[in-house]
Image: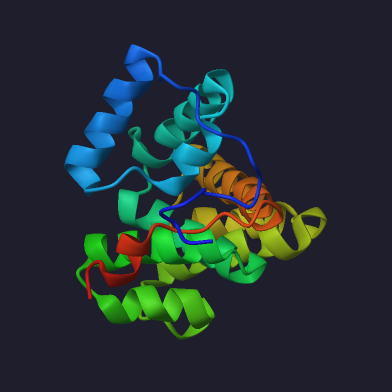
Length: 190
């Protein structure tokens, strides 16, 4: 299967025709990104599920936050690296490369975030996201205090936890359905 075929290994065709609002959203993606991300195509078999997914993604990744958009993408990559999610590593690795202007940063986060040239604040954020991914039940107030000491507000901690939680969920869905990244992601921002 290639990304130009079905977006996952499941036979779940997109609604045809797409509702006008969905088609408009896909047209915006095509104009801005030069493609419709396969994750959106995958969810388009059920417009309510697509809308729920897109709404949560857009809120977590694009809405105002004490975390920069780049930092949220960094969390997505670190979580996806631990989970070995091919789709998200490729797609969000490309976003990190583009937003940071640093291809090395994107590659380091994919391979081993601990070697990445990040600020101490970002290291604390990524350590928390990694712990949440690997052993969320071990998080204690001392871990949240480490984030506070690094300059994060309690609202920021909420956002870190929610971005990490969202990508833990989506990584599992992407892996279970063999979701494939669009070919275009591989060459972006290199």
